Image 1 (cartoon, rainbow, N blue to C red):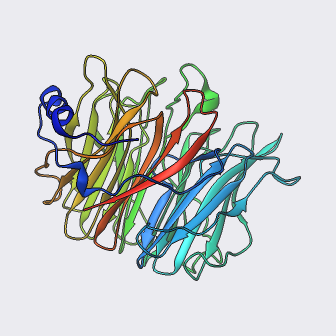
Image 2: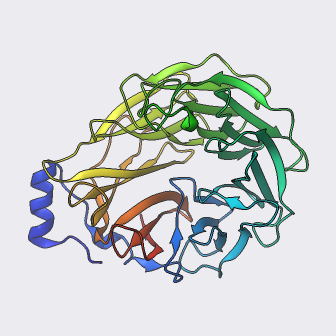
Amino acid sequence: MYRIGGPAAAILALVLGVTPVAASSWTPPAAVSSSHDAFLSYARSLAVSGGVAHLVDARSSGALDYRRSSDGGQTWTSALTLAKPSGRYPIVLGDPAIAALNSLVVFAYRAHDATAAYLIVRVSHDGGLNWDAPRTIAHVVTSRRIGEQSVAISPAGIFVAWTNRVTGSIIVQRSTDQGASFKRAHRIGVTTMTFAANDPTFTDGLIGLAASGSLVDVAWSPSGNGAADSIVLSRSVNGGVSYLAPTTILAKPSFGFPALSAAGAYLAGEVEATDGSVIALSSKTAGATVAAHRLAGPGSVTTLTNESVAVDSSGTIVFSYVRNDASGVAPGNILVRRSSDGGDHWMPFETVAAHVPWVQEVATAFVGGKTLVAWTSCSGPTSASCDIFESRGP
């Protein structure tokens, strides 16, 4: 891996129509894992609170691992396996989610057997040093899987959102006692969206979730066949006790799964449109009104993938994405764009790392006044040998 500099940077800037920020402001990519079979999970793999970064990944064996860093991502603990296939849960799905607030950390994952699907959480009360036993918070009798889960924490509680793929129900579950128990499932909407065309087995709202104070934001795709027709947002202003009717925040087709981040009245999100462009969603009114900004589009050869987003209480937003060198999952450049005013204006792109071999999922967070970006890089297009890397920037 190397960085764009000199004439190469100028050429790329001309092609993209923007002026790049010097890559030297980012640390060289450093390996977090060395097992050669570690994979991040979309934008839900990284959480930061109280100066501690929490990272989860999946292994080809089905194990789900956890690491923490108390120095802004410079060093990481050895992997701790929080879940793996067992006689009770023979299949553990490789897309865990994590959230943190001060010393409270919540890890959520899905599992299933031949007749039922399960949503399971583990909770740490000391910043990830020790973990409670797994707790099943949802159980659906079905041969289908439970829909993709998202997790968020605020002073109002722990929130876990998921789709019932049998009924299409959009569900939020809430704990107000730090995960000791969860209240009855709250159905806030419905979806008919299937991300595999003409296959209802994959009915899923592909939910994005964020929480800050008493505000809870839930975004999903209500319809679509192979792609999302739109994205809607439902808000709670009373800590998840009740939710307002959903409103459309993106009316154009996309691949759904909007990653959300919230801090104070600021809300930020990301989504990839079906035309290949990447869209930033932003709100300075806690989601009451949401703006959509097209941050970048594909080139004649290059493609855009694997976006993630973070926002802080000052309204600073960091939006990360990958511009692949060619169509599909190819070596690509990890890029960042920033807004310092809640999404009204966006600075030119910064290069985090260039020509990363077969870069896959990217996750972004603020830590210690800096930006931390983590990603998966593989040895080839079949993901035969993959590890996790990170870089730190302004």
